[in-house]
Image (cartoon, rainbow, N blue to C red; front, side, top):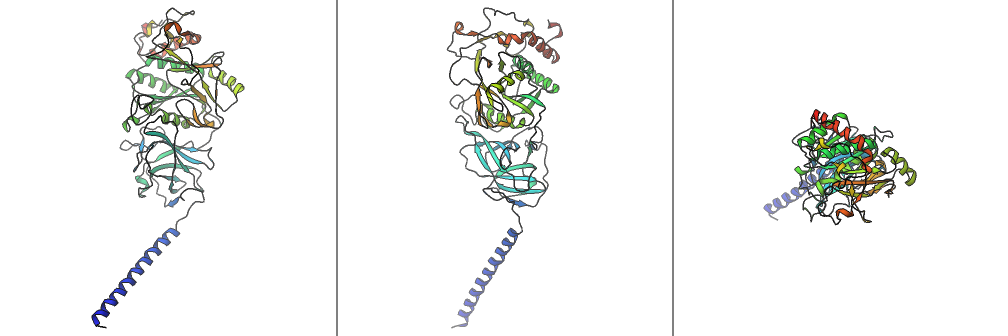
Length: 465
């Protein structure tokens, strides 16, 4: 064999040896690195990896994004996905406990999400479980629950970030974190009744808003959560007034910055990305926001009033309902449409208080509309009052998941009055039914409304009766 041929064989053997050694060294390093990590003992679809803890810098407000520490001022976009995050809560009722992130997801997107959890000086990364709510009304986006089970040894998670599983893990300080709320499962509550209003968009109905908020206080409501996108200047004055008094909490609802929100219930009525201004995710956030702050939560709109028929407040009403139907349930109230196109002609059998002073106030005067449409024995846009701790998922009308279910309330015990424009209606004026229940409160309602309008500067002092 020639010296040149031997030289080529020697070079080939040496190259194979070097390549084998390099692969062995690389794999050994990877094995050593993997062996140095620890994994919490918890059954998950993907074991969480524990990365060295780097205390994240949690900004209050940066470039339109916010870590929800207190009140949300914006939504959080997920890198690598068209998912929008709203808020994060510790779900004590899950076995084992988990962090629940309320979000909106594009329903046909196949991106896998992962949890980035800060907990007790450790940083966990693992696959998230995602469930899109059944009620999305055919729109491309739906409300979603993103679940992050707690790893072993993690009892008090403080922050969570959701990312696409396809994104490379980076510095925790580069992630957008949500504060995990509901850290304790309270058994005593600062509020007895909380009403959730969703969502306030281009709102100018000042008079009816004031009347509704005063009526709710007569019912025993001591907190009203309002998810607001925008409103008139006069409406804002009213909101500021009730916020200062401690009745109202305004939650900024900036969804229209990110999605084309529909203004109607169905895509064929008004195409868009998501149902009716994102009403369903707002209601679910309200449920969890007040789960351990309020004994009961009511899901209804500013133009809807749930009125008991034989007692005068929700406090008395709930005693009747729990005795008749059982406690810890969701109570459904029959909707009665009160079209504002039909005013009081002829005058009702009871005397109305003086109302001339409200003529220049924007909005509907509910005391002028006491004729309702005949009820139909079909789905009728009912609303609910519920123990929030017995419910997991709510929708526009009723609940999707609950521990003890919902029950209809006898209309002779309580019913809901929906006072709004109806437009096209099949009923003629002579077919409408007079219902004067609201007049039982009118003697107290009129002066209470006058005080608010005076204190907000919307009603001159000399116009009061």
